[in-house]
Amino acid sequence: MTNTRKTLKTVPELRQAGLISQNETLVLREVASRYAIAVTPDIADLIDETDPADPIARQFVPTLAELDHRPDESTDPIGDKTKSPVRGIVHRYRDRVLLKAVAVCPVYCRFCFRREMVGPDNDTGLTETELDTAIGYIAQHPEIWEVIITGGDPLILSSRRIAKLTARLSDIPHVNVIRWHTRVPVVLPSTINDELTDALASARPAVFVAVHANHARELTKEARAACRRLTSAGIVLVSQSVLLKGVNDDADTLEDLMRSFVETGVKPYYLHHPDLAPGTAHFRVSIETGRLLVRQLRQRVSGLAMPTYVLDIPGAYGKVPAGPDYLHHHVDDAIYTVTDPNGRTHSYKDSC
Image (cartoon, rainbow, N blue to C red; front, side):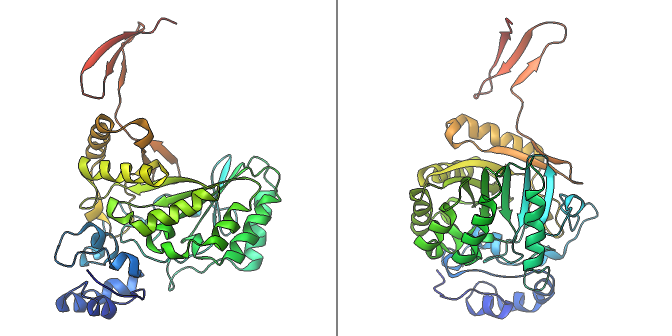
């Protein structure tokens, strides 16, 4: 296991840490010139350097496959820009908005759907004036019930800035839910301290934190302790994962991941079908594969451990469930064919 105490941000640093070979050092310069690199010590320590198919390395260590760009891929695969009325806001659904508070992350996932927009050499975070405008937009739209703070990763902000942002959103009467999307409890668990949890929990609205992890190995003892510090402060945790080829595209791995979330106090929420971001074809599985895996997962775990498998429709048309169908209606009568979790079919008559 690698034992390093600084975040690796360059190809030479990856080489020095033993995460790539000398030959890879030469060819990965082009990847690094286009897409940001960051591997925290907590993540580097999880990587098995002897395993060429290590699922942790696959998520964070760049490869030449990222230069394989397909015609159906897009730099804005889910249409954030077309639904952005002011800088930093994405208003895709009537009752909620994204507030993109920052444009940098503590780690850079190699499959990220915003990979063209985040990183130190890409977009910048919001200026104070732009943040004022974004919060003003939220205040002027009483239909906005939930604000989802994302980026980048917003939990890299200082506790002071998190508390200030929380207070400003709390002052808007119609905002009743604040949700933070983050990898920090997993990739930088030591930063989830009392000051940060107090800042998050200081909100008047209900506070949710969506924790992103894709493999059970990511939920280390330290990550679980960080999550418990959040729940102890009264913050509700839900999960976000992406279905990724070579990382979690088998039923055993998904079962381990979802059970690990629940054991950590995190309710499985979304299992995302991978988006059509540039250079991510090597991560994608077919929707039919995803549906089969979700059906297999239903056979193994309770509803408490079941995420919703979702597809974000390209072009800013929104997110829809993509999981398997269990009910089939017979036309012109009230009879349904129902498939149970074990694949057996049954007839059900709707008596209403």
